[in-house]
Length: 161
Image (cartoon, rainbow, N blue to C red; front, side, top):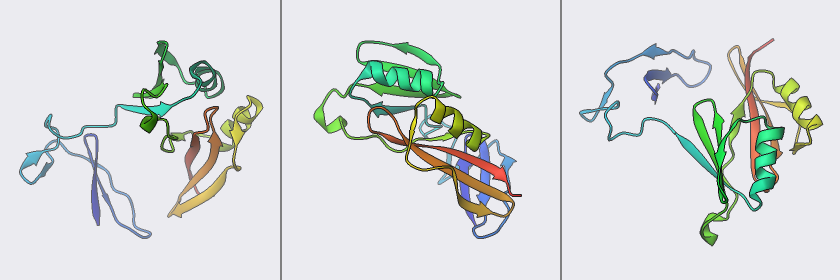
């Protein structure tokens, strides 16, 4: 049994074919510290994605992925993704010019979203496919490239048929 803290929730996970259990906690402690204290990481607030051409990247994330653009400057653009900010930026130094981590965008209907994004010109590496099944839940994914060469994915968790 592993215990994971997600925001204000405590998620004990039993590996294998066990059942997920979720319950609200108000005072989680580890080594005498309260996880809700300011000196603990609370959540991921922003993810930075390096880009080579900011205008081209803004067009892709705004018009093809349909993410709301919060604002942009000459070197940065900020998008809203359900409480998480996505920062596109021209690298200030060469060591930041590498491809970003894979961002997994959660969607409800992966096949419909895949078809829409495909029609909108998103370049996919593969088609939606099953990657894991745990009990009655299936996890589906499909990977795509943004205009800057970064690999990202759509993911969907659905009830098994």
